Each structure stands twice: as structure tokens, then as C-alpha cells.
Image 1 (spheres, rainbow, N blue to C red):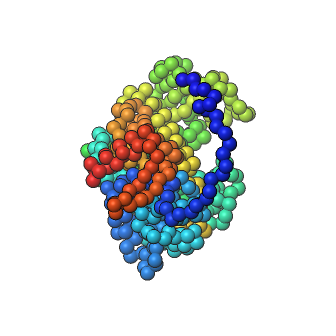
Image 2: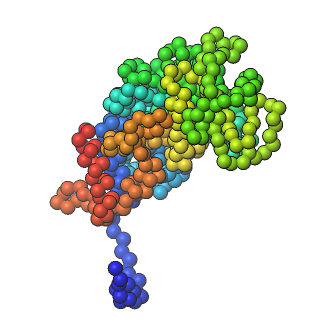
Image 3: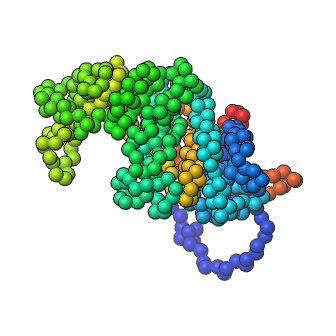
Length: 458
């Protein structure tokens, strides 16, 4: 629609007079949705019971600090000092149940006082919330992914070490091992480790503990496990098979020299798709006691191979193709097994979101337990955003071969921008507390939708 010049332009006007009044203004009106979610999940009660014997005579205590950290991430912040930006926000105070928020030094000191008992109890809260969601969904198949992620730091924090760090070589780091549920995109558990350990360090006990907990909570579900080549270990694979768990694990060529010869000797490849060829063998390495199904996969690629090509080493080379090997105990046809294993890439997207939006790569203190509590708070914030969307929306897709998440999840940063960061004003007309926001139709529709669904779920 065309408009006239007089409708668009206006003359310059004088500056308005300034007046300051004691109004309760907020920049985070949408946080009331998460306040309702906390009540539905009884999050405050769970954290209170978790840290009941650990807070002592402290005015704030670890429970309050953990609750504030979760809100801190939901507001879009990552560093501790950024809590000054919402120090006097009335909605944040109401959500936390405080008149005065703790300052940066108080949060830092409280985190530094955390011990192993606090970390273990907090981890139980994280796991129980995920298990509660899995019980509600009652999915016939649950796909569990395991992988590690580097947490770099420029400081000498307790428990860090110099190890594998592709982006910041030589920096000290942690290397936590995370367990995620593919269908919900939630982090179920984490094993905190220094940065100089291999992916498989402590992995067997951690993997079995996670799987047994999931099986106990969801005995009806068929459990699948996907892992990369760092977890290719005879003891882990034998343990999974003994537990009746179906798995796909990448096989590193460098560990088994025979694999390269098998690939190069193969003349005819079956077609799983236009781009993927394969053949399979029932085989075992010399030290293993059982034979397993090995799938040899050849993928057509269009990009050039960069860097030196050493044809006489372990990895087979053929121009225009990439090769991989998968070991599995699954009975499904090869195309489905390959697609299932390729779906592991969704976990990398979860890691990327955790680092960019939930501050998983930020190390706030010099104490090991304090950093573990901070990490668990970031994982909890991520899981809560997924919980909100699963509670409020129907699944966007059915279970597919790649085991993609059943919902089209919005990132934490998107929810923060579109939902949480809404300006508003708290008033009391006729004594009734009222939050007034701008009449934006889309924001109003989204916010009321979340509140109505949560009220029905309460």
C-alpha cells in the first residue's frame, strides 16, 4: 500500500522532559512461562530436597544459586558477571522467590563450596526429569547416543588437563562424556573427566549405568546405542551384547589393519542408495570371543581430498569415495542400519546448541565440583526448553530410520529472543497483580498457548 510523504515524514520535535518513577518494569515478561513449567515439574521442590543437607546456614544456599543459574541460561546469558544485567528485574525476582538476588561474588563462593555429594544429587535430579518424560512418552524404541565434548579454559581450574583440543591447542580443558536421548534431544547424564583422557576412559561403567537406569524406567522399550570409533572396544561391545542392547559402533581402520585389505579386495558393492554402497561380513578380531556383523560402507563424495594421501597406511583410498566400517548386532537390513548410524550427527547439533546457547563451554570457577554444578545447570536449562516444547506441541515427525528428534525443536536462543525477552510492566489495578505487555499478536498467541497447555498439565 502506498503512503503519502506527509504520512511518513514528520518534523523534528523537542526533547521530552524526563521523569523517573518507581515503576516495576521488566525485560523478561516471557519468563512467566518457565515459572509455570517449574511449578508443573516441581523443580524448586526437587532442588530443595536435593540440597537439603548441603546449604547449612547460608542465606542463599546452593539450591537458590542453581535455580538462578538455570534462569540465567534461559535469559540468554553465559558468564557469571552478566547476572548484573537483571539484578533488579521484578519478574526474575518473582520466579526465584527472592527480593534481593545474590551478586556475582556470592554465586562464585557458593559454587566453590559445592562437593561431590552435591554433584551426585544434582545429577540424579537431571536424570529423573528425563526419565519422567520418557515414561510419559512410552516410546517403543529409545535411541541412546554417547560421545565426548571438549570444555576449554584459559585458567588452571581443578581437574583440567592439556589434552585433545582441536580448536584451542595446548589449552587446559575438561572432556565430559555425555549421554543423550535421540528422540527427545535431551541430555540424560554426564561423566565429568579431565581433558587428557581418551573417549573410552571410564566409558564402560558409565554406559551400562545409563542403559540400566533407562531400562528400569522403561522396561517396554527396545534400546539402541550408537557410538563413534573411540568406543570401539571389545569389552564394551561384549557388555552391550550381554545386556541385550542393540548397537552400532564405528570401527577405526587404524586399529585393525585387516579392514583395509578387505575393502580393497572387494570388487562388487551392493547399493543401499544412489550414493551409498556396502557389503557385510560376519567377522571378529583375533582377541574377541564372538563374531559380529561388520558393515563396510562406501559413500560417494563430491569434495576433493585435501592434504597428503598416504596410500600404504590403514585407510583405503579411492578417488570420489569415503569408506567406513560399522560393527553391529542388529538384524535389520543393511540400509536401515547404515541410516540409523548416520543419524548420530544429531548429537553434534545438540552439543553445538549447548555450547553456543547454554554456556556448556564456559568454566566459571577454579574448583572441580563448582564447575560440575555449573555444567549440570546448563544441561538442565537445555532439557527444560525441550520439556516445554514437548509438553506444549505435538510431535512433528514419526520414528524414522535415522532416529531424528520427534519434535522440531526451537533452540534456546530462539525461545529467549521470541518468547522470554519481552518488555512489560507490573501493576496492581484494584489490588490484582497484572503484567502488561505490548499487544504483539504472534507473541501473545505463543505465550498464551504455552500457559494454557501448562495449566492443563498441572
